[in-house]
Length: 255
Image (cartoon, one colour):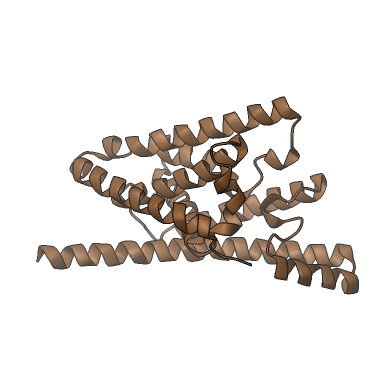
């Protein structure tokens, strides 16, 4: 259970530094612009996310489709949530942006804690030789950059009314779909069929010997779903807390 590999240290830390620089530069350039202008970089990233996914799906079809490439993973949510967040201008725009920010915050936090769970050292080594590895690494780094821009360009103002509930319901909906498809297709979407963390997978298998497959799997699905929901909500509140601290610091420097 290696949280960070040497490959992650050598690539992810410099990438994060570059993202912060990009966010800082764009903030200086666009801070006085209306949100319609400030959101353009996020729209560009949303288009890139969709194009990356289209490329993956086309190549998978050409090679003989792999069911694992269906968009039922947690990070597949960004294929839909980022474009909607970037382009939607309807009545519930702020709530939509709140959900998008919560999901991006979740990935950013998980990448800071356990990047080896998101993509492996092998994916990093194959970045220039295998499109699927390139897609995996690039996709998640684009989402991290999106989160940096959401904060740096102030594309969302956190509000307690409606946003936590919307994030919770959205994540619960994802859990139902992903868990169902994982069982039907016997494919490990979002860790719903088995666990990618070896010690926890050993516990699941040992319980299966005692309780039977059906009961163990039902309990496992409930636990994974609860963890998904709690992690998204927790990430949202961490994000809100960080935004509040930044706002307070800004007030202190202007006094």
